[in-house]
Length: 274
Image (cartoon, rainbow, N blue to C red):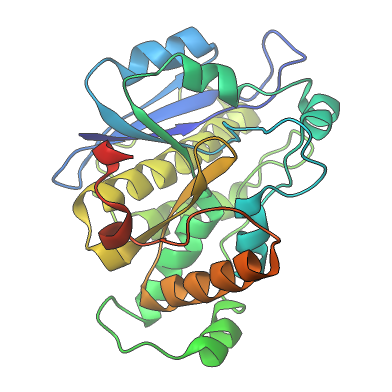
């Protein structure tokens, strides 16, 4: 299976908003194959293609009816100190004019489609600079204290304006996990070029997540949630996985969530079996 990442521009109230969506693919060898900008769902589907892939999207693709606040996976992420945008239909309608993710997912039935969190990808890669895979676990309390100090560079646009200073640092962190020699030259100039660069960073972070799921060790990624209620795929390590297991079990025992407790690759099986 191929490793594909998508930054999905959530805005549905304008036919041609300044920001674009982006589609990235990383080969089995860890080399970035392409990053392409696009506007419509049709363009995205065409770029993803027909060959089976794990497709990680930085947008909600499952929005249960009647959800008043956080989805189960977002409750778990909150206890892992991983910020996630609370998802309800009303909130997405108010902020973006609707939700693109579910419709896009429906157009890719032959792929394994799951949500991702680019900021968490960058944080995990930063964590691994100081704590490489294979390093003995810290223990839950020490890990949480250390994890809270890891911050991704601020590169995503705010108020429609790009944050130029954070783009190069964020891209440098992604280079820890993939060969980025094929990073595309900008097609636009000024702030519009920076908006595209931010979209590319998000898409590549998602592709790195997919690649890690397909080719990394079982204790290097986690899957949390269900396809119907919302499921997220994140790069992880033994510390993060252990913390997720503990909190999922506690929340499930309290009756706060209803979802599978298995979170690591070895427990949930290969992506094509989901």
